[in-house]
Length: 284
Image (cartoon, rainbow, N blue to C red):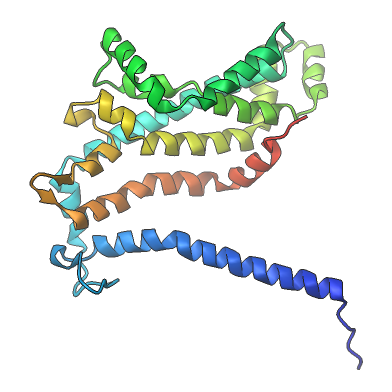
C-alpha cells in the first residue's frame, strides 16, 4: 500500500498551525501565572507569604483565609455595591449606546457624520481630565457618596455607540423597510428587529462595560468617602494600611472579587467572538 506524499504547501501549513498552537499555549500559561500565584498566596499562612526562595505552596493550606478576608472588612457590602453599580451601569450603557448607534446608523439627519466624528473624538480625552469637573457637578447635585454618582457619569460612552453602530451597519436595511411597510414604527423596528439581531454585539458591550465598572478605582476613590458605599477595588485597597498589610487576606479577597467578572465572561463568551468579528471595527 503506497503512502501519498505530503506536499510542501500542506507541510508548511501544518507546521504553521503547530507553531501557532504552541505560541497560544505559552501565552495562556504566562497569562495564568499571576492568577495562580494569587490563589497560591491566598492559601498560605501569613508568615509564609514572602518566603525566600518563593514557594508556590505553603506548609499548610489555609482555606480559612477566605472567611477571614470576608469578615476582616464588610467585604460582602463591597461586593453588593459593586454588583449594583456594575449591573445598573451596564444596563444603562447598553441601552443608551444602542439608541445612539441606531440614530447614527439608520436615521438620516443633517450633520450626522460630522457629529459622530466629534462624538468619537471624546474617546481621546483621558478620564483624569474629566475627574475634577465631574466631581464638582456631583457635589453641586448632592450626589457624593451615592450610587448615582458612581453610575451616571460613565453611563454614556462613545465606545459603546461606535461598537454597536458598526454592527448595525452590517444589518440589511431591507429588513427594516419591510417592517415599515407592514406599519411598524421606528421604535418597533428598533426593539423587535434591530436589537434581537444585535445580540452578539450587545453581549460584547455588556461584558466590557461590566468589567469596566467592576474594576474602576480612581472615580470611586474620589467620590466615595463612606465605607458602606465603597466598591470592591476600594475594599481591596483597605487591606493595605498603617496597621499592616494583610497580603494573604488581600489575595483571598482578590480571588473572591474575580468571580463575578469570570461568571459574566463565561456566560456571554459565545457572544464575544461573534460580536467583535461582526462589528469588526469595520462596517460599510
